[in-house]
Image 1 (cartoon, rainbow, N blue to C red):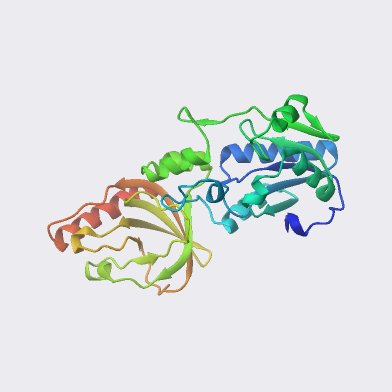
Image 2: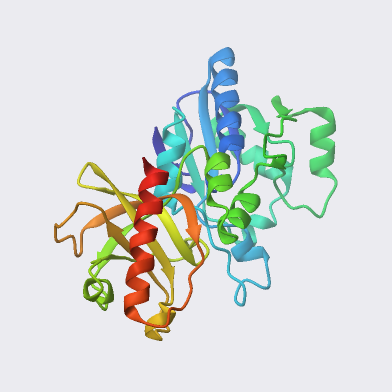
Length: 309
């Protein structure tokens, strides 16, 4: 898969079939769309193209972003990597700006015609593009064509546990601690990738030395509590238990993500790891003493091992 910026493209050396969206999470619904995109591209003897945004449109369009910033399921590199797994030919990125938001649907399709020789545009059942304050989009959809570009609206919606799969529903599930539902919708374990930081080493004093996980900016952090997790490091996967929260037993105010890795004694400070959340074990709580907390951590470890067995 080749990654390009739309503004730097003069003309692709091929005809293309494209879809457009943020694709945060690249969940099962997205994966279905990408497979359909590949099917159409093969049928039309074209290259498959995914057009996505380098930043979330809500960051530009939502006036409440400063007070309530959106938290994403993936960093750009994680998102692009997962799209690549769908065997897409080209990934084209666009910075979402106020100026871009004002482009009309027809003007945008004209740009795609010029730059990527688009023959077919595949849209999800609830997807739209271009300035929403006009009738152009409705006209294009009703005709199913514009300037020899075929417009296909896929009407398929996928469900898990009777809930329609969407990025917003996955964010809601993760924020509520329903990590198992989020994982089913994603088609994989929700994960964080980061370097390991040196923390306060409180776990070491309890007999459970932990790795402090740094969270990338704008990345959604799961609900506070204890999780069964898998830690990927140096091409190996280790079973682990992870606590997210403020360590109320020790009266700390900084939110941390601390992972105790089973059967592991390497120094991984400043090393890059990927942490996958398998299941939620319990809420974070305050204990009357460090000894009682240590007893609970031992139980958490046993619960995590059962989940991960």
